[in-house]
Image (spheres, rainbow, N blue to C red):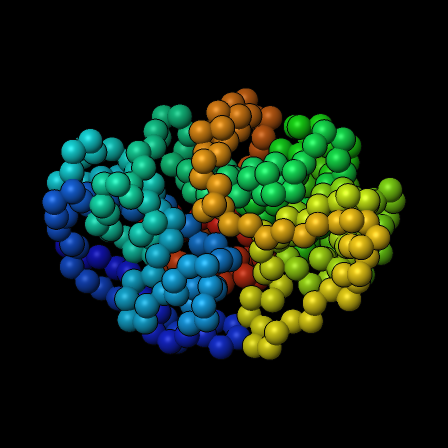
Length: 332
């Protein structure tokens, strides 16, 4: 049996190029003691993976050159050498970018395909969902009545942030996105009060028009002009949760910071970055609260599905371009 897996051959400079990667064939590994062999069904591609392609010091180790890359994946156990996990079980793990993976039992989380589609455990009920939940409720300290602005709002995290804010009593939720179709989706399907296409004009002007009374919470997925605009519209005591800055991930030179940081003195505003890995203690609470919203249809989600391991790289590049609506998933 042949296992296909994506390797990083060289560290990208600027925008990643196809020659930086290779789809490699290898033998399907055999699980050792305490391990299981998983045939992956769905793979996740996410913006943070761009940082792991660099050798720069970060919050997570860089991908190793000449070895299979990693990422969220969910699949079926086809061989087990571990107690508590049987052949036929479905598990969530972090050895994606490949068709088969040998996973230590303690790093595999059993999931129920009868409770939700398997792909949902990579998105709305998985890491991206918990990211939205923790960033909004803990880092940004959202409270009922807050006005919330979300950038990258049609993405997997942003769309969930806005909907959770609405379900918990936000006074107004505004989102930015990169196309008119995504703007329409935010308002008509996800229930945002207002949304705008950041390509249509200055973000600061469009945000002021959408939120004339300012914002109390900004959930940042983009950085750059969006962060500067949010600081400009921040109300007294406003909070900014920095989840990602996709606008600068491929920059070869450091991006200039917001020019209006001094306004935080006036507003007593706060900016705080966060990583979902610091908030896994919220997982039971997250599943207990968000699971029923998903089941009832109160919280809606979209997936952009790309088929085939051979298209895994193109799916990742699509995330960086903003091609996806909701969670980008690769189906094997």
